Structures are given as structure tokens and as C-alpha cells.
Image (tube, rainbow over all chains, first blue to last red; front, side, top):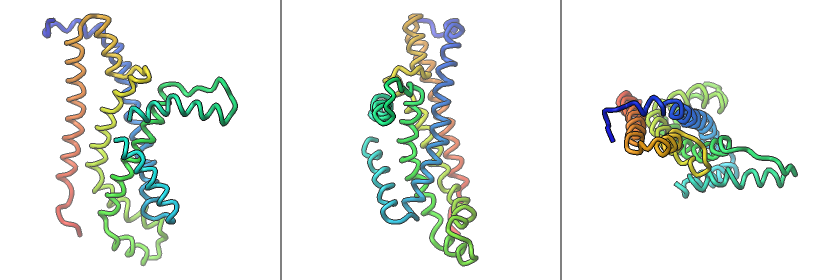
Length: 67
Length: 161
């Protein structure tokens, strides 16, 4: 192991960049659509009729249990 | 989160096949991961956004409605613009959490940054170098996100109007 030798990075770069693209893509798309869905759920919880608010609360609580 | 990813990868295609009757239906690992993250993150983002909206206070909504705005108009024009300021630090923190959670997609053999690094490390026999590099990359990105969240937190007004 030689931490000063970075020649491995040149060989690894295409694969790492491909993986980084997947990671960033999942993060950005997941965050954007997640925020839109989260806004809808939050508005349902706060301002929707009681049965819809309960449905949204159940959905959020069911995922909070897995956290 | 792993359970949600498994559901989206195995259970969702099975349910779609049962509903549509198409035996060859498959959503693939990328869409399965995306569906899992959107389903879970929308629940977490919901709590952040709800907290931001509640931080604005009911008087703002009542004042907007007294100006003859409908409830959707009041939310869009008055409440949400103020709420976004309150929720931004938590939204950034949650997004950093999502970035870290994406490494869990290895369970469905999706080639993310960590998965690609793992394969390269095993192929080239450079385990320590590659994993240190990956750790450094994650640390830099997450630290930038945390710094951004803290900067947004400092920009918040200290007293509510």
C-alpha cells in the first residue's frame, strides 16, 4: 500500500465517475420528487379533510417506524 | 430503508405483474431504488415541511384569507414562501442523509459510487486506497451540505415577527 501513489485513480476514474453519477442522480431526483411528495403530504396532514389527513399520517408514521 | 428497497425491487414488480397480467414486466434496479427513495423520503420530507409551515403561525393564513385570498392562494403566496426559510436547513440535512442512504442500493446490485469503488478495489487489489478515497469524497460532500445547512440556519431571523 502506498498512499502517495495515485496511479490507481487513473484506472478507477471511469468506474468511479459512473458510480458517482448514479449516486448523484438518485440523490437529486429522490430529493426533488421527495420534496414535492412531502409538500403534498404535509398539506394533506394540515389542511385536508380528516380522513385524508389520517391517511397521510398513517403513511408517514409507517415509514418513520422503519427509520 | 433496505426493507423499502427490497419491497420496491421484489414486491412492486410482482404486484404490477399481478395487476396488469404481463408476466415479463420488470422495473429494474434503478427505478426500484428511485421509487423506494421517493416513497421513504417523501414521508421524512413531509415532517420537515409540516414543521416549517407550522412555524409560520396561523395569523399569517388568517390575514391572507381576510384579504379575500382562497386557502390555496394563501398557502402559495403567503405561508409557503415564509415556511421555506424555516425549513431550508432541515431540508438540506435530510438531502445529505439521502445521499448517504443511496449507498444501500448495493442490496439490489445497483452500481452506485460505493459499489463501483468496491468492485474497482477488489479488481485492482487497492482496498485501502480506494475506500479511503471514497470515505474522503463522502466526507467532503456531506460536510459541504452540513456547512450549507448551518449557514442557512444562521441566516434565519432570531425573532418571529
